[in-house]
Length: 65
Image (cartoon, rainbow, N blue to C red; front, side, top):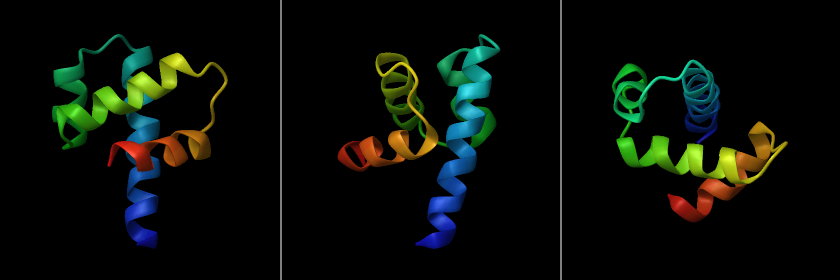
């Protein structure tokens, strides 16, 4: 579980970075080897909760996963 959490941390950071670089969702998912739905969920949380940190995103993702 700890490795999964660490991997998800990295994915979230990469997704946010890619979003800030204006990459499309499909490209972000492909680049990070994750499902498009996960990318959309991360971006939904990130964009609707200003100032949210990584832990906040992880907490909210539990409801999506």
